[in-house]
Length: 136
Image (cartoon, rainbow, N blue to C red; front, side):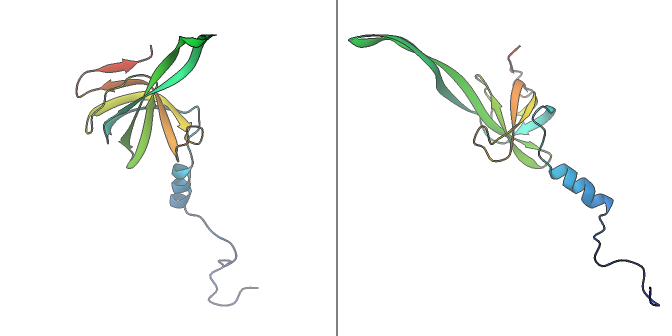
């Protein structure tokens, strides 16, 4: 039963506008298989790390053998007003404020112990210097 002056809006029901719906969709985490390809600007210089992948050796009083190592480059970019971490498996030389075209996939940072989403790059084109880093 409605009284006079009652607009018919139920105070117990929450109404969402279209703007709040699209805002929530933008904030949801990216899917792991979602492709990434964009022209962006680098925020910081790239850091290259060397880590061992496996050891092969023969124990004969002392060990004879070797350690195989791989390189990984890490840097951040400005993408849609946010800072995003980019991981490239290999050497990738990037300086701050370089224009880049990056192609790769979104990944959840939890596996890499990084808070937030990460781009695992397959191809990085440095448009400022003309260098191309690719796994192809």
